[in-house]
Length: 350
Image (cartoon, rainbow, N blue to C red; front, top):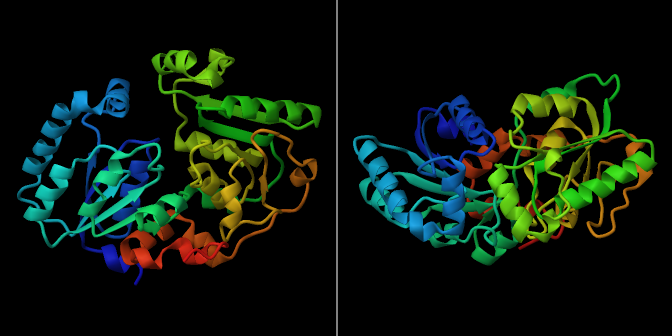
């Protein structure tokens, strides 16, 4: 069954935190497949205070969260849904999910997260409420006995892959939120590029100056971070697309405590770009090839110069589709946890 056959004419209640407009892209993709989608932000508000207090001192803000979800229950009490889809599960309450199940027992409840449970424990307390659950983290999938499904690229990246290449402005591109050792590693790669006559561009995003100064005090990796290199405005999808068009190789620096593949990985895959990454786990994935993906040691940064000049290779059309947002939705909505990506992995996870 295709995702269009599964979703056409259905009604979906969709919860997701706001993340670089990805929630809008997911909503659009579901609507494109024929569904009517009602969206709510998981958080009561999207300002930096709300984000910070939920992460650091959720119990202080719990009353506000409870009021928010009680209001949603009131808003939807006369509506009927075929699916409840929760993406990430950082905030949604156990009480809301139980009350929703009582009110709409016919609705299939689906959970997905693109964050590791080591970073956010709350989702582990609500998994029991869902009919099926998926995570982008292979180790979390094993430990919690749920489905494993990596991330995706947006349709816009296909246009880059199909475009005729006439030259590149940058040999190496890094885009990312500033955290942990990203600045240190990317700076070493920048220095390496200069020594090897390669042009590079780095863009570091930080939610606010308040967050930056907090990190400067409590995170040793920020001691040498130059605030002038930070941007407190996130790039739009269109701006990212333009930078990808102008770049030959993409640099990916994963969070040291996170083994799931980043969105940047799949953007590079969708755009047909070569990738340099610090994530050793990528070698387990079916699309991995040393011709297109070069893994570097985050403690001993030394890319291979020949990687920039060797010809690129394409993956199969079937695998390329599976990595798209449509392929992602298809797996989540039409397949079971037992039909997940574990069977595609090179380590033959059972």
